[in-house]
Length: 83
Image 1: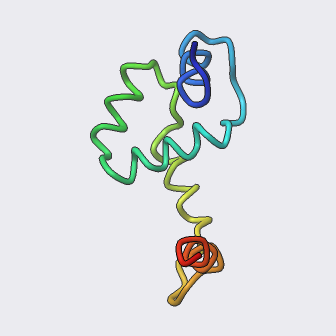
Image 2 (image 1 turned 60 degrees about the vertical axis):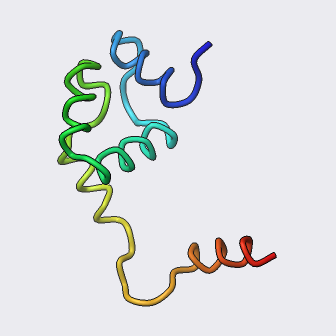
């Protein structure tokens, strides 16, 4: 019935899962936080902190390489789109 981030959020809200966040939930958290910090805080509040704290999300952002120019990932996406 549920899979991916939805399932992990439900498991965390019910207290059945703790520890590291799955890549899918991490991606969801980063995307939601990027588009709307208020929405992120609301979802975190409604689902009883099943999403990581905003300070954790900010730490995840620090890992992203923000150097000027094209990244290897961006070039790979462009190659896929061009074909």
